[in-house]
Length: 152
Image 1 (spheres, rainbow, N blue to C red):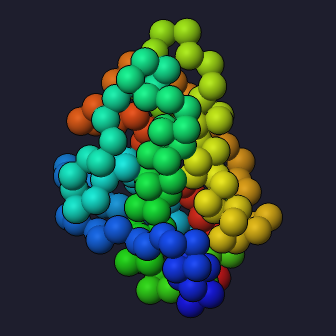
Image 2 (cartoon, helix red, strand yellow; image 1 turned 45 degrees about the horizontal axis):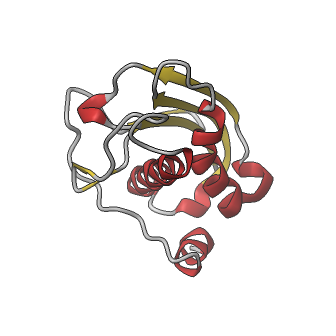
């Protein structure tokens, strides 16, 4: 439970996991890899941040939204694994940013999630990554993030 202790020391907690909002599962385990479905910055299925990055939202606000999406990734991983210390490493992080035309700072936004994973897991939290812009995301979310992790 070292990861959860680190979260507590950072003043963060895992959001509750609500049922999926569509026809999908939150996680799919294949061997020692766990694929996590896209997560948005919501708590109890209520989106906490809406808007377009570079228009309604600053990069800093979007980074906070990405951090909350990352906390949701960790929450569904805890549900799957029972213990976040079973995560060996983050293999890949894929981030989508709902952004204004001409916005080019997608990587900085997704750093809100990547920085949390690195803080909790060190170099094992630094994954191969893609950060893409999107016209729209579910319910007006500014970010959606999914991940692949290797587990013990």
